[in-house]
Length: 138
Image (cartoon, rainbow, N blue to C red; front, top):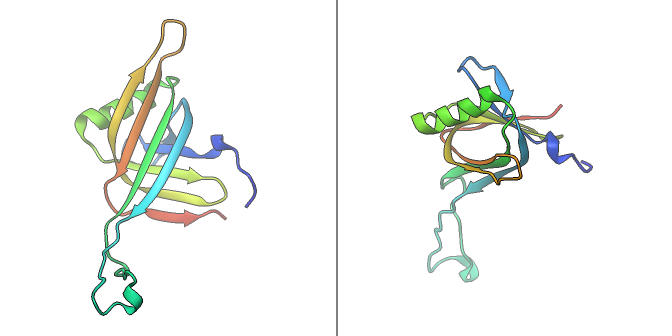
């Protein structure tokens, strides 16, 4: 896989719950991270004193963050609604030439900023709220 445009990493939200995803407008920077906790099962009998981990155990999580400028009233309004109502709608993360990750996320942080001589900006963070699916790019 060659170099990719950062603007092609998209975060989409299901606006109405009907499976029609729309890109969150105005994002300039996005980040996705996947994490898995480890379960240490090391004992006195561990070979050579090396740590042993239990395969398939632990909690898996994903986190998404993004920042940008206000551009589209419907996605801005939806992000605010998701946060204040504590909803966990489905989101899609399109990772160029890799695939699409989809599942429920909760908006855990929503920040707004602006200066007197610049545009209003926002930052948002999301945490996975259930099982995620992955579909590889064709």
